[in-house]
Length: 103
Image (cartoon, rainbow, N blue to C red):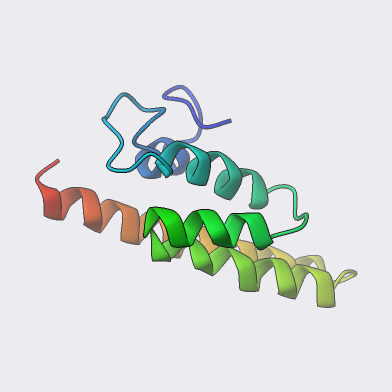
């Protein structure tokens, strides 16, 4: 799912799969599970553990989006808005982190 030929938002926030060196050992796992949660919302506790171990707090925006998708299970607009907001948060914070490091 996260690959250089994949969606630009995913490759921008996934340093392991887009050719850049990972900052921690958990970045690849966090990226894979975080990107999959944007599509498949299943049990999120292991995801939160990966967020804590990697120190990439922006990925916590995906968890409330999954909660909104669960509560409003018949409202596709609410689900789309929640996942879209989580996607924007992850993309912007990851981009700012990369720009702040110098690329």
